[in-house]
Image (cartoon, rainbow, N blue to C red; front, side, top):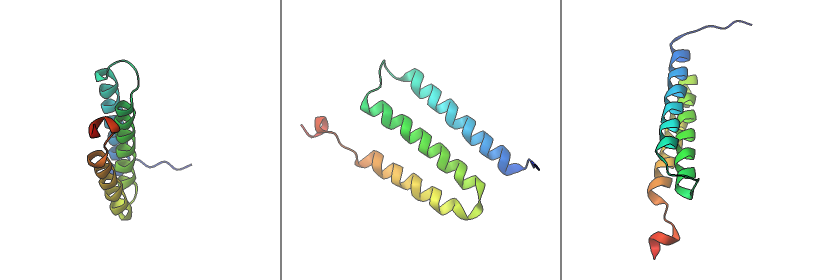
Length: 86
């Protein structure tokens, strides 16, 4: 098995560590329990982290990663609950 370390490897490791740190900070900042918003926030952190790592794997997948991040942003700003409508 030939394992080669290059800049992309360090970038992927950095993105994954950054995502993990952000997830830990988000969990520490949340109140007790897992409400709907807490699960959404953790899901968004996880998807954003993995789509950013995906963009570093291959040069031609950057448009896919940006599309995923755009979908996440649209979900964040477009989500409304029944409590917001009342």
